[in-house]
Image (cartoon, rainbow, N blue to C red; front, side, top):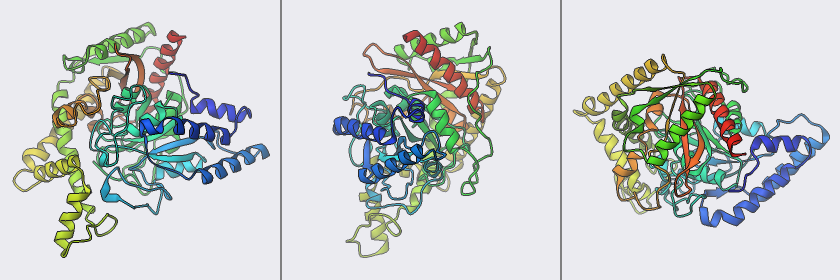
Length: 478
């Protein structure tokens, strides 16, 4: 695909008056007009007149010499489970039809304070339930690299918007891999910050103990810059921590990379395993040590994740009852009928499946057998990662066992869809930072992205290492 300017490059061009915010905005509009009807990355788009007016005002301020953030006037897309005042909020579900939030998520308000322009809200799997962006109530998003293939999920709309060149960067959310997996399948960079690094206030909750807002972009510098803008303590989210993300710095000359043997099993597509070997060889050439490690609890992570996430989802989605802000069933004669009819027609099949699973796993007589046991597995997994990071600095692995699969191939087989998350959920369960960078392509020309995972709050180390590998890969292409 034709190389496009990163947001960092756009900021440099703005600083030297090589371009203007209005020109960047018009370029986004042109790209959307040319390809959005094929890709379906957006659920809703902002008013172009308002955006042009804002961009022109930013350009005028820049000409006057006003002090502006370097990224002022650069467009961005936001996943449609993140509240932005003045924009619809659907979570790709019919149950939120017509809802517009009265407030803006903290992460977005911090970007708006830097005068980034929210150009639209991107498509997703309903409430975050899926791995392909086919579970949207509205339409499936297509992978810009191969229109007959999925873009991954649940942040598939955000990944597709970046991969298609609609915007240089976008916000997604990552509960079990929903930033990292679509980044890998679409050939973009994606980053899941440590749990607590970025406020969840204004993010519609799926699994509150794992949800994180994270960026997708065309370079590691860009995702690092977005994370730096969003990060920090928020009085509206008690899980946030005061841990600043320093400016970029080169990683120590001899990083220790671990390759978990459980991630390179026969379940992993051969092209993906070969990409891991190739990147490990490049890391070795940079002077880093590469050793095989074992994370034996990996096979149990997926089961634990789907139990914990479903229990939390069933609880969080109880608020969608037709009383406060849902598309209420009008023909119901009693409160109970209204509740049943609203939720029956408002939720899609996958949402209903997870609500039923979560309700059962947390019900009397089964809570300890399922939810309690899953929580114990999670705690053991956290300890396993902690022990591994005593021997290595970072873990290199696939984030998806395969490249993008054909649209419709796994929709009727939930287990096959769930298994696509097998390598992404462990870091989410442990609350760890993980970055995905595009590395190569498979035999069919589909993108392969790989994951670098680090200890909790070692976000800067993960990003610095990802940046070093990205630079090495780019140099080899040149």
